[in-house]
Length: 596
Image (cartoon, rainbow, N blue to C red):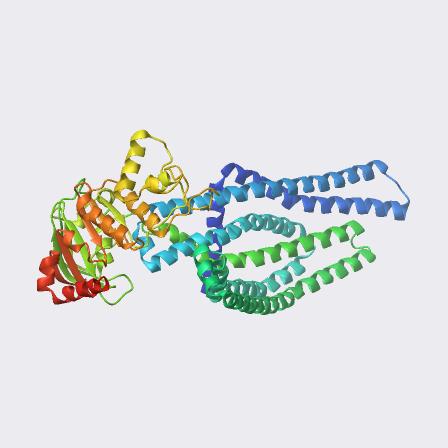
């Protein structure tokens, strides 16, 4: 009993939540849809009642040979009017539904987009949070169907109430039987909806794999390599096999479901047949008129249809409670972090004191007892093997995470005390997985398409600092588009040129701390050396931290921090580390031998 009470609460909670979304999307449209829904619910019952009177009058004419043409014409006009009005109301309801679908999609999408703006950057870096975020976003498409079905549920509720009021005196037994049949149907429909949801989750990975094989055959970078190596046929066969397997799985699931649904709905058809036969005999023996026979059968069929529709859809609100809950949880996620209220406008020094940090969900620490200092305007080189913790230091300085133990001091105050938005305004960063935006060069650097002489000068200066020579690319200007995704005349740039744009974007912010995580990975050795020199000695005075595997420019840094397996093995100049830290010297000698 408690289980059913809980399910009913869940159902009505989710229905009210969906109604609130419909209302908030467009209140005026929601009210007009509500009125039209009420009208479309009533009109079939009114039409059935007019049909009853009309049939009774016509049977009187047939059996008693008495004709009241005025009444018959009046009833015919009423029948035509109610039918026409029903068609008009249904037409306007469908039109209003189409308009409201767009309003609702706009409301849901704007809500999701706004939430992504408010979410803290760490939500996109932590895999578990990011996957949860993606599920919340993807649920919008599925969720809008559930929400919009709510209007049809309300329409069915109206029809059900009116049908019960009409049939309560003449067909009470049949209504009770129909309601009794509802219980096993409700249980089955809930299990079916839940089964469908679990089935979709079960095959989600295979669906993603299928779509992935499809996409990589059309994406430029992957398609070139695949076709060059003549493995496109293998990819195609893998895609085709997955497609066939998934189709077969879908067909088996649907066939089983459809057969069970047919069986579970069979009692309704039998019950409707019983009612029809019962009222036919009543009409034959004169207990009801022909009109009453037609009227009662129509109303009972409407009653059954309303129950079945509600059965099908109300089960959705229970079975898909997990999906609806995921959508709600998405909007309950922690938003942008403003850890403290201490103001900051300039970063003068940084201190890591015995910092230990473990990524959420991991057991092994990414950093262990890390300590170092960076003084005003120092240029620092972070070097080490893969997985040594270099990028983790960058993310901690950006405020993505809080440390497990130890403390990070900015200007001699713990990083947690600062307003995080202000702190990030003082920091510009180029991350390993930099992004190339399919926008104009101007927008790719400042995300604004306004033309301004001073701003244009700053954009060109940023490109120059990043060693990006516009004159070297024929026709390329700051208003030219990168890539051909939206513009056929867009410029296809090399990987190195795209990375320089990412660096220029960082320079444009004119922050007091520059964090560069592998900013030269896509550059040739000459361009790499020139850009690293610019970062370490050649641009305006500010604190700079460069993460790089290349040690050729390490001697230009004021300080080198050498890490391995989450621990600092040495801090000092390049020359000092070569003398004092054997691992660093070996690291350097291995690279040096490549060029000797």
